[in-house]
Length: 112
Length: 113
Figure 1: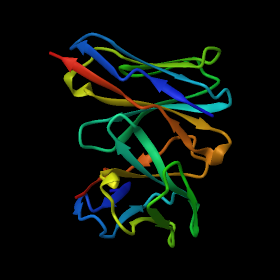
Figure 2: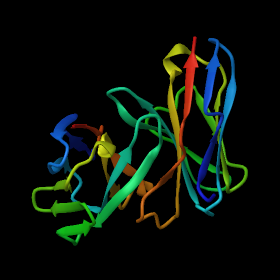
Figure 3: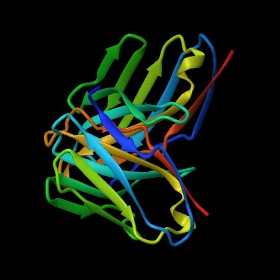
Figure 4: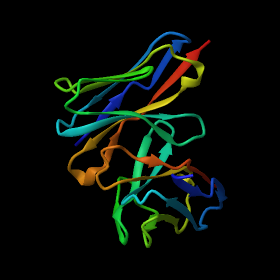
């Protein structure tokens, strides 16, 4: 079945760039998403990319999609302590009642 | 404010008690979802609904029931709570053409003792 994998932890220094990686197995994915979950809060949509795009940039966020390798990444430039959170990758499966398939989340720790 | 509202935010139940979690959205979304989140297990789909009056099972439906009598509300019921149902529960909603992702509520933290 469909699967989305992420590394579980990432630690960076404040001011550095963070890169969070995600791989997925479903070649029929249409949209891919990055969500952010701060401690004690719900999930917040950060950004998304359509499968026919290679890159999307939104202020400090850059999403790269390598459809051939089924690899998605989220780069956060100039990482701040407020970026400390869990980041979830998800793919939209065109069939399957259009449910999102979720990774387990990457916990990003930003050290001052 | 527009969005997804979950009530209650916190609850402690004794084993065997029942309760209902309420999710309400004011965005006219057709699709609604109930997830549970446990450490190290990510988000697991309990039940979902693709429209008023319809519900379907997700990955972990056992011990839960749902109802969607009105388009804006999605209720999650626990008939006889068990300690294994201690978790954080999230509701989410989306348009039928949900290319733009889900909108999540802020969660309900449930402890079953």
